[in-house]
Image (cartoon, rainbow, N blue to C red; front, side, top):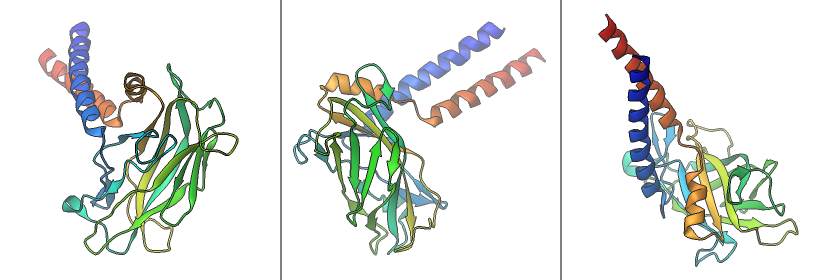
Length: 234
């Protein structure tokens, strides 16, 4: 019986993971981060987004994609408030086999906010982690892009070929006030391509851990199977 239970759970999990990862991957391409406010928390259209330091607009070492585009139809923010980000964790590097905080050439990723302040991600953590994305317009909307770039240990634009991963959260505040007025979003993962071909880059993206929702689904499914098995036994 235990063998059948484990087999049923595994089949369901694999089917869910296959479907979910495909949908997740399809959504993340070439898409802005689209937050909205609901039930006092910043919600997200996704938690993983791709970015390319080789895009046409930014050149080899800069990009302003993805942008930020509030979905005010689902829930706009309070007009006049400031939408902000907070960098968390540390910069991670993909050299072809695994993600690591060990960087080949002391690389760092810099994000310049709407006020000209610089947030720096490196292998040790985040410096000046909180930045301003934009103020909220009269319709509760924000649609803007901010500059992101990669630098090497000489202080020049540049970076070893590979993929780079930074994480942040979004929240909003009153103007000129750092105190959040809503619960911050879930973690957003930005995966930057620095010179990899498409297949190698997608391998790096695929190696990012699956969202927490998958683990919650697995736990709930396992509990459901146990309950079902218990009823059958009685």
